Image 1 (cartoon, rainbow, N blue to C red):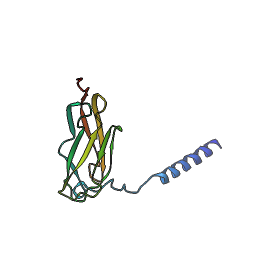
Image 2 (image 1 turned 180 degrees about the vertical axis):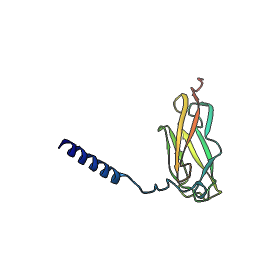
Image 3 (image 1 turned 90 degrees about the vertical axis):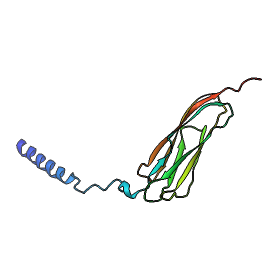
Image 4 (image 1 turned 45 degrees about the vertical axis):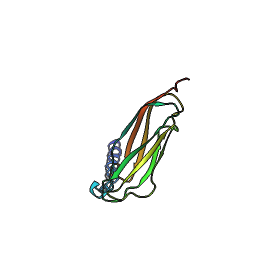
Length: 141
């Protein structure tokens, strides 16, 4: 009796295990990169160097769509509220260039080490830009 129960459990286990297998071919994760937009930045990092308190904390990261289809930036976000990015909302056609303006609030003295994450429909769909430098105390008069 015990052998019969074990045999039935084994048969059911093998049968259900065989049906649980996924035999469907996996769908491609994305289009081949040759048919997608591709974002290429002139630089991935900007060094402000030493900046006076309340000085100019703006820079622009210039990029080009080096792909074959229109490039759409879906989101650009900074690592903190002291860094504010602005970017074009319209599609960037193949071969065209545009820029992401980044404004850092230089009101507080200290080191600058922030990141800006760019998300798009490009084959390289997530790119991290960095800004660094140091905000100096204003000299006393």
